[in-house]
Image (cartoon, rainbow, N blue to C red; front, top):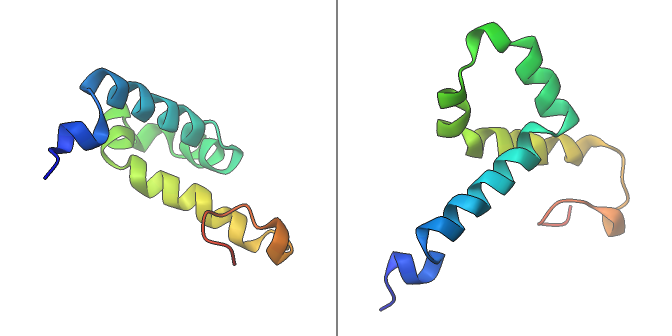
Amino acid sequence: MKSFRNIMGDSQNLDKRIQKIKQNVINDPDVKHFLEKNRSHITNEMIDEDLNVLQEYKDQQKVYDGHRYDDCPNVVKG
């Protein structure tokens, strides 16, 4: 069985991938608006700990944009 490190790659690459995802998420217009609106209540540590929640929020915002099924921007079409 492969170790987690073998599956995910070395920690430096993993850190780079996480930072890339984080930048993508926090630069999303909807997420950016939320973070700016709640700036006084949100710390960088909170963003790091709950990055997956912000990613899900970002992805779910695309569900209601009136797109056609063929043009769905989500990983799982719908």
